[in-house]
Each structure stands twice: as structure tokens, then as C-alpha cells.
Length: 116
Image (cartoon, rainbow, N blue to C red; front, side, top):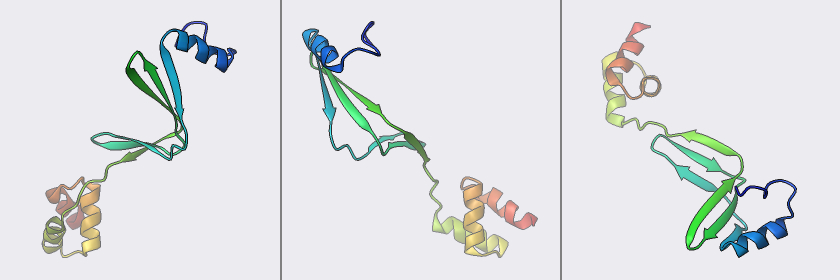
């Protein structure tokens, strides 16, 4: 942020000053959602407000809103579920639940289901 341009400054005057410095601001209207995809999770803004700041050809996007983190679920293969069912004699639902709890570790899922 530019010193002296924080709270209490007229937004119109601030925009004019930034324009004089070669910085253009554009607010995107009708933004429905912003999603930032990471390897292990997504960060989703459903109430996002997006501002583009263009400083001499370099664009910077500012996203404000309420972020919601959504962890990526692990993929449980049907072959793994069937193997756990065969080894434990439990239902597919039990096997899938144990695999999800153990992060897809087949041996640990089998041990978990045979302990009880």
C-alpha cells in the first residue's frame, strides 16, 4: 500500500493519484467464484471481489472475500476395496470407510477391520 493512501482517503482522489503514477485500477463486476487450486486443497471464494491493478503493463489481481478451504479427497480404487473385503470378510462399505480413514493404506485398513 502507498503511504498516506489508507483509510479516510476519498476513493476517487486515490484513483486519480494512482492514475498519475501510471497505475490503473479496474474492479471486475459479477464475479461468481474464485478458486485457487493447490496440490492438497482448493481455496474457494464464493463472495469474491476482484480488483486488477495495472502498473505499467504488469497486472496484479487482488481477491478479497471469505475463503473456504476444501481438502482433496483421496481416490479409493475399487480393486483396493475388493481386496480388503476378501481379506476381512467385511462389507464394501466397511472396507471403503477403513481405506478412507487410513489414507488408502490397504494393509492398515485390513488390520483396522480385523482388530474388532
